[in-house]
Length: 271
Image 1 (cartoon, rainbow, N blue to C red):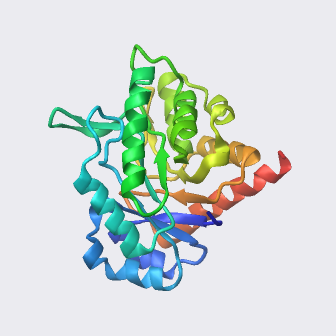
Image 2: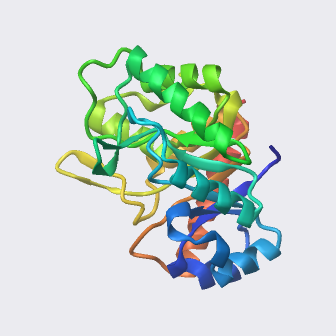
């Protein structure tokens, strides 16, 4: 896949901001928020300008025991076709079981048995999609007691078995470092970054010692430092800023994209 550049997550609340903002190279849209046959006018306009748009799913649930829903896969595929997307992304997460919705992107139990199930689910998804699939590491506030693999080891094995791409969220790595004591740089060293599809950056806040990955504020410097660490190890095809509520001014968003570019450029001194 070619270079995507620096992008931002498209939200209807940010449509005019993104349309008039310089320095946006690509977009990501939450797949569940659009209807492929009736795309928002803003997305059609931006797509006509040549900006790649990636559908980003939040409900497929490849981490569950049940196979992914054919209807959800069909929707992701339709989004990719409607947007002429270079790839589709989703989360390596557990979201439902036995007909009950978790209401959150929960971590997958990282056992060998779970890996076999996830491998099959990812393969089913890949077969149903017209473009490559990339999976995102999730933020967690707990870990399963019977984990046999680290998240990086689990992802590396999944990539080896399926060839799936990686969407590495450095904010989620930071979240897991704060909340679970999992060293983020060690995770970067263990991940197969040669399969990197693109990167997420986002902000959040700490309350009572717990980091909440809210996507509602500027990315802390520690997250941007992790982006620099990642870029010192690999050349990511794209880096995308997520902002999901408490939307700021155009100037703040432009400043955040500038901070992302600066963090990426600092990696040149590390290579």
